[in-house]
Length: 256
Image (cartoon, rainbow, N blue to C red; front, side, top):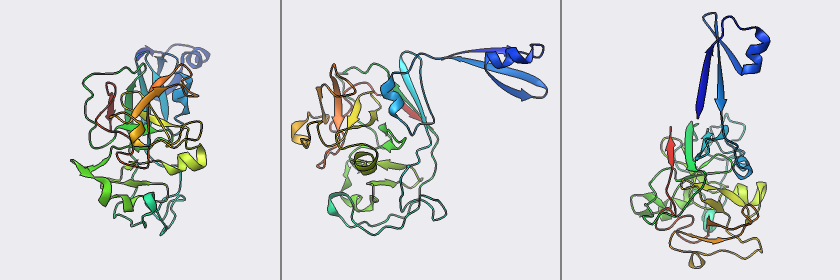
């Protein structure tokens, strides 16, 4: 992104407002004008982001990583706290872990025009993408090559949970997005390689299973968001849930 800075002590006030945002520091007024490329409408569906920008090559997404739904993991003083002792993913009985949700200021950078990368780099532990509500997406492991089996019971009512630093995330279908905000066939978010993630059903209502996807847990066809077709991932109810043997494309970055 390109920036132009003006020292504007002697400019008339109406011109300051025309130039951009005004901030006052030690009696000197400085304005900063940002030049951005247009952001395609599909990325503006990330309603939980604090900002979404583009420089024509990358999409930059900022988030606080705070779920917009109730959770037993919010502090009891939070309006979204809800005590819960019901069932969770795969019919398991919820067993709360000792962690609590803590705001995470994160910047996600993904390719504007994602393309296949023959190297298919492995997904890391930690964030591998972002959901439409600004929550981070994690891969199919609880730790290095450790299956999620022991963690699944700690997924809350909407199938998310925080890790030890308070970073809330989804490993599996984000139930709030698939059943409250949108549908099970809708767009759920994006992985760091820029390719979109969809829910556990196709638009015709067919349930997606891992056996119907490639080893990276995706396939290519047209969707409502991409009528010309695009490679995309799906959440499924069976392992690996979101991603298989690595990124289909070249991943961007997450910084905090």
